[in-house]
Image (cartoon, rainbow, N blue to C red; front, side, top):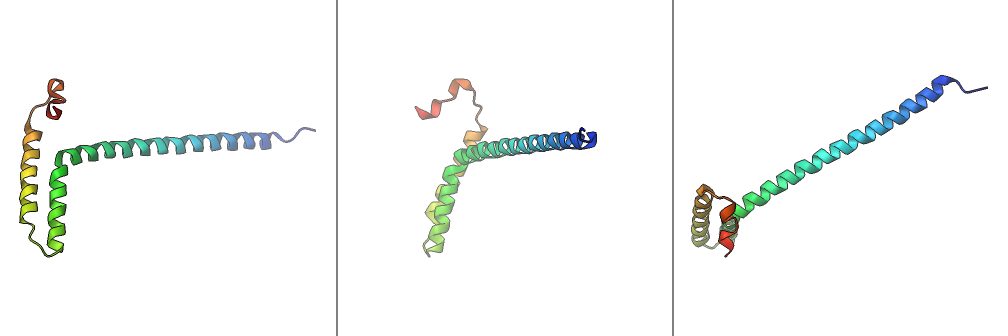
Length: 102
């Protein structure tokens, strides 16, 4: 005597639902990785543009917390921020891609 058809159907449907669940979980993980990669690339871009400004401001905060004057660090932060704004305003193309490293 063969087993009832409903049990074989239910086992197949549970197999299909498990594979769909794994596929959806894999898709969600892939989307998460893409989002993290985009955030990382944008953070690297911002840090490369404003890195010196951030370092100077942190140095100023550290000096103030130590009870010292932070005027020189804050002036350096303003100078590098102004430089970053000027660099951002310049038009860049592939012709001058590596111009600043020579």
